[in-house]
Image (cartoon, rainbow, N blue to C red):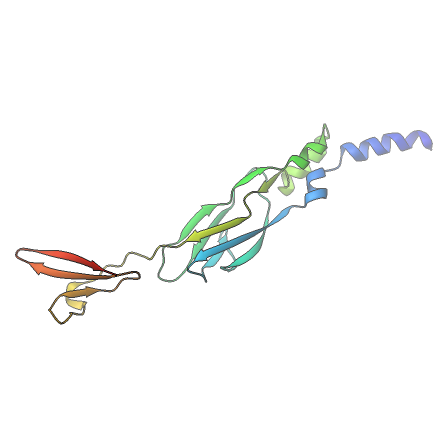
Length: 163
């Protein structure tokens, strides 16, 4: 019986998947946006709205794409940054351990774990005849951060930005 203990212990050591066992196969990622309230989509699956901390399966050798969507703003798409999970080195020569860590994604981990994203307002097209006029007869174009006034001068138009 004792002669089987050592081979069993060696097999158990070589066949374990260290990164999966010690660090898990998911990471918590905090995502903030300016403005807040953007829908968070990871690989097309909605996980919440900003600001939020979401649990994401580790990527293994692939990449995970995050999309932030908010009405009136352009979609913000980015890839979660990753790095090698050094705990996986504890697999040493255990071929099965490496396979398990790669299959579960634990061979890599996310870094950084905090993303602060600024969303840009969508470009909007306006028809001149639909725009309101100010008291001097100039067109007023609505904007998020400033007022744009279009004034006809001679044979063209001039744009005046006020904030």
